[in-house]
Length: 279
Image 1: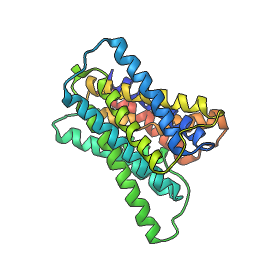
Image 2: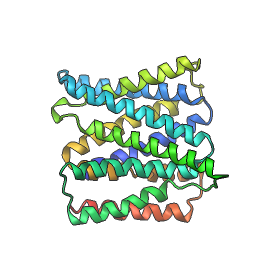
Image 3: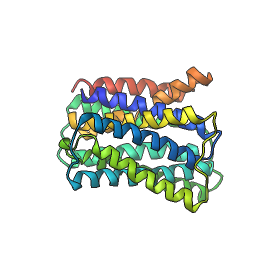
């Protein structure tokens, strides 16, 4: 069940990235992020109210808030690196680091994946790299160092997001994802205020923005449930394959060509998930 939940989480993360990226082409980034995250917060609030779960201990809310802060900071470094035109370095490196850190944390915390699951993880790690790979060169060593710095910081904070969210107790229900979203929205609103940006999205981008927020929140919920059903080290590997659905959606809606390197990544992803599922 954990692998299935993590795979559905990857699907939702991919759909969120696709929808958010579509909107960001037409609207400023900060308003898109604030609006999408607000939509996700409303969904999380609906889940919490429908479950009837009492407010958990402050520790669980703190882990959720920490996850939200880490996620927001990670996205800031990621988008800043990409904005510099260094997608070919920033995107794949951040994706790989963001998966590797929680995997190492899980194993060091005492998790013991089966040999088949370890083999699947070994296949999925390069799949993440291949799926997020972009063409492009780096002009000089200074630009390369900057790209690597942004990628490592982005991946580190994204990895910390996964770890912090997974540290909440099962008895806390979905309150941690609501706390995470509240913390990230607060940071983004402050950023918008300091940069004097209006929190308005174009009419054409309203629906994709809402879709991005809802699917991103659904992905967070599914990932949290996956970590409670199984091992963090395996759940994060599968969830980090989110570039796969993004690639497929771009193919379906924009008729984008899937280059051989990404097709190989898709094949690795399918094989890796199959092996992890055998555990």
